Amino acid sequence: MKRRHNPYLWSIPLGLLLVVILIPYVWIVLASLKERSDLLTTPPRWIFDLTFENYRQILSEKNFDTYLVNSLIIGFCSTALAVTVGTLAAYAFSRFKVPAGNHIFFYILATRLGPPVAYALPMYLVFFKLGLLNLQAGVILAHATFNLVLVVWMMKSFFDDIPREIEEAAYLDGCSPFQVFRMISLPLTYPGLVTVAIFVLIFSWNELLFALILSAGEMRTLTVMIPSLVLHTGTLWGQVAAASVVQSLPVLVFTFFIQKHLVRGLTFGAVKG
Amino acid sequence: MGGAQARASKRFMWVCMAPVIVFLIVVSLAPTIVAIIDSLRELSLTVFTKRGAFIGLENYRELLSEDTKFFTAIWKTVIFVAVVVPFEFVFGLTIALYINHEFAGRRLLITLLMLPTMIAPVVVGMMWRYLLMPSFGLVTYYLQQMGFLAETTIFSDEVTAFAALMIIDIWEWTPFMMLIMLAGLTAMPEEPIEAAHLDGANAWQVLWHVQLSFLRPLIVFAVMFRAIEASKVFDTIYILTGGGPGNATETIAVFAFRTTFIKWDLGYGAAICLVLAFFSLVVAALFFKVSNRAQEQ
Image (tube, each protein chain N blue to C red):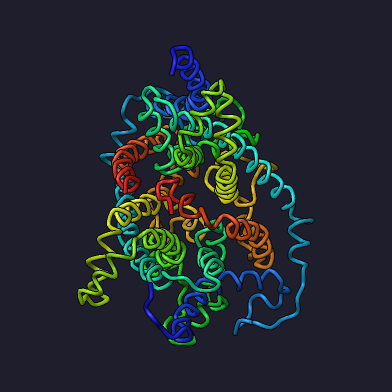
């Protein structure tokens, strides 16, 4: 828009908005660097002596290094699974007439629209009966399932963007359908594919309910363990803050890099942006 | 295309579809069948007498005709969605209109504004728990200094607890609405706006008759999408109130979780989950139509 305005006047409400949005997070970052005596004070303390003690404590005493690794393993395995299965399906949906395609497409969507708890219990019952509850396999499968719709919808929209003429030329040169997919269409979507993978990774990394229900003991993830630092005898807020920062900082860094496709990712490919 | 190539295409299509079909059978269809069977039994891990005898539709009958907590939870969820989504939409649209032009640092600004939506809901919950702590919390302290808040604990009062959860949800998801609206505004051609200005329309008329009518399919999509997501709210409530005090903030997802995994009544829980899954199939069918329309646009 070309409306002229005073940039200083214009940025005042924006500054206020940023304060409302960022202060809560800044406050938790500050808390993670505080000594115990600076955490619960009236009035709240903005200036204090820095310490990394909280980070040391959660990583070396509270086993958060283990949970961090669990979150990573679950994140990467479920991402690999969802992206592989979903990309192949997306290509089929984009290029071929899949019998009952609309029904399958709809079914995949439905797995994501219902409340996760409605899908977590049936999974729990199966894993409970198979005795697989204390493995990461359950959470990996669950995360791959609810992220499948994102991969299928987004990758389908990326495949749809590729002009058919490019593929047809390759067919005329004698390529098989697999060769066309592998050597031409798939490489053209690589930037999109990376974006999709980052989204799936973030959603898995941030997920609580499935991880809470389908994992136990040493297999638990960061999101499940952060609330466990709240104790009846008093919460160690410094440690909660440090764990929260460790959990969330990588997400913010990745958000900056995938910003171009943020809309597409957050709406499962329904809005192109 | 020749016949041989058509056959090759068909074969490759099945190669592409096979993994997803197997996957859906293993992780979705099989569990659903198990859940249907278990929903017909009385199966509890804590009550010794309930050891899996088949009781027909008893679980469903009890849920749909006797369980007042179930209907209270649905009602709470409806209120929650009906309050937060309009606020998120109006705030999101306002911010989007405000930053809908090029300026230095726009990309970084949008990344920063997206922070509440992108960080884990667990972290959002813990963060606000710390900010709203009685007397020591940053927000509580300044609110008390300004005289807005009496010496009460926010999360021990039914009304303030529910209101706080709503405000946190609005804080968390307004950026998401902003982002969708911004995408719609960016995609909008300039000519109609300029033409309206030339015809002497004022800013409000342009907004109402030109921009919003252009955005309408997207708005329908966004509001519906957020309503579905908001109806599933779980993480922040689990962290901040656990559904309490009493069951004042027990939305449907929290109710299902408590019944199933706190009381360990698996047969009854399975019935709840299947009823919810059925509801969401209906909603999904509706959503499918709306989003197809948004995509065509």
